[in-house]
Image: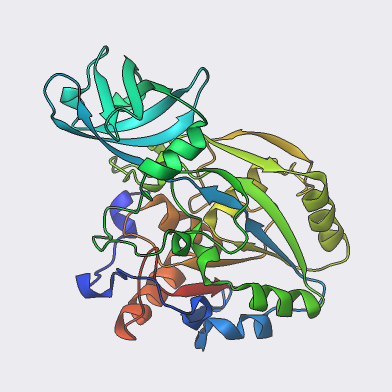
Length: 341
């Protein structure tokens, strides 16, 4: 299976640069994964495609302002640091640009010395370990100095930080938003729950894999970065009960999907657990838990496009993407949505 099998032509003007004022006013392409049938809807009508007894699984991770712009001590050279993974003793695994200016021993000052980071080591794929020095509480300093780490294809400035958070974001730790959830409002979630649909919340802190392209032609040679996930007892109980009663498990986003498929046993039973996952889902994968998926439109040749192709079939997905381009859907993080059912 080749990476180039997962490409499509996307006009640059269809890449959404700004979020809609009303989250639920996005468009929704509904795809039948068995027949390939396509329907066009508004996202606020999503409840009409959910049935009493279904369970909607959402990722309640919260994006931290993980992008820091600083100066190299001694030279004043501009250095950008993206926080990826918290280690210990105020040390983070980071992505540093430009990396050549960040050798071990390099010290970087942020906010005129309110936060100082020292590069202590170079690890996998050139990532840097950076130990931070600061007064007070790290999260408060980061909130003051950090920026939301928007994907590189978004070049507009984000006016409202909260617009890159889901309305149910709770547990801080992500370097990127679980963007399928950005379409939901509190009112829409209440409507869904009142219809008799369970809401289960899991956590997966989205990491570097979101930004990293697939650089190998043989899909099976790609390595996913590990991401931390949590499935608590309440969520596991709701999901298992839904399966037992014959309801559908509808995952909101690829991150929720990867969490569930990582936490399930071979029979699809979910155990309360936490840990690190490197699961890579591409065509040929047999899903153990999910029946449907609400997701955004993804980058060509990306692991996310491969995941949705595993669920609905590559031919159905690429046909749906061609239709979305023809119908001028908005793509990627701030774009429109797809429901694979």
